[in-house]
Length: 204
Image 1 (cartoon, rainbow, N blue to C red):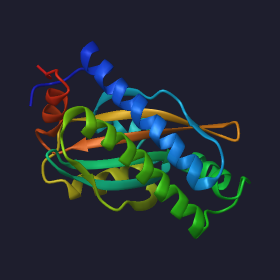
Image 2: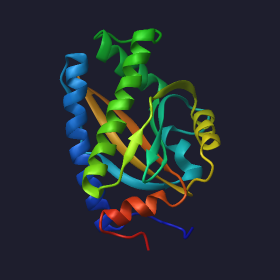
Image 3: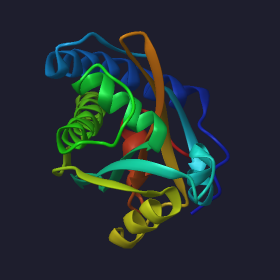
Image 4: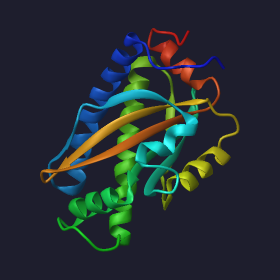
């Protein structure tokens, strides 16, 4: 594929609108799930070279929590919510028990898994509404490992991927605690062009 150095202003505007709709829907769903007010910042979208994805959280050996799912339909790929392990623990404890510290319980892991599912589903639904493209998420999986290991696992699951991934940087605000995460779309080869093309713009 041709090298991409970034998104055009039109592409950023289109994806920002998707992000606004998705984050609004996700905030409502998450607040209902945990019975606490959950705010999500206006997300920032960017294209990141595949080889630099682990740098988003400090490098390949950084301990992280990943919530991942596969996407099928008119465009396909995988989606990953990536949180530094410390941030994941803080978010889980706040959402489930209102406390911080300690190991993740099964209930807290489940809450993080559901958080990833809601975020991914909200953004994919918004994208589907704006493009008419069917994007169907799978049941999410949970992993706690080094960033490089989780990303390598996802790439093994994908037969042919793009050289760039779409990163949506978002910030959670739960009980006045701010926690940043990265929602990453790993498109199968050709899927990114399909998505951006249906938004009325091209990647040329």
